[in-house]
Image (cartoon, rainbow, N blue to C red):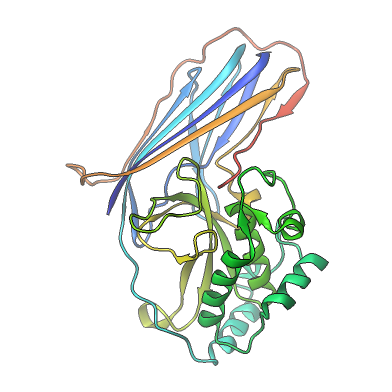
Length: 326
């Protein structure tokens, strides 16, 4: 399946700011069943955009706008090919827990088996675990499928009921939230059982016959859990689960970045210099498209001379608003 993605982010400042510094994590990953065939990043005011890949293979674009401006706009456009993963078996043997424990003892996936900023255990989390009856009596795959469904049933999807920086206890106490919250909670529960889990930031193409709960005009987030005994040579694979929509992840889910939690992979992260407030608007569009004439991967940055005047000596920096994943 081929998709075209358009992700527009706009910041409006209440008064002109003298400098903006930004990181962007919007370029879809290229690996295994997904290939990013084309990517363009437009920045207004014009800026010289550079990029690097972090230790998890995420592409991070970064730029500096040093001149006075009262608006900042980013338009990311991509063409991506996503193939359907192999069908999973109904279950795994109970001995799969031993393989998970061996992986934990090796330390290879340590950062995905231990708590992180947004997945810290709490009393509210323990209450949910007891309520859902989550333990190791089932095999890991059956447990995760069941947890995915129980998360979907236990929480109401309500946009703006939490903030981008809300701890999981907010959604746990109110039993409502968005995909970012549900993903963090499911990861925290699975890591408590030592299942390696990571946070995936990206996009989802809406289902045709059954409506998704997630907002189609926003970015999305879901869980990937490492399970042994699957894939080539039964060496183990990362399995995607979407608790917001109660589904396994397949060719509809387009992966942009992976991390321990949202703190590692926000679509935008930055600061600006000035004494102003900022207003953030985001629009996302994901559509099926035809295969491009040349499917060779292409990365296009749109650099240029920075516009505006020279930065002033005001050293008051404010953090940019971040996009909550829906």
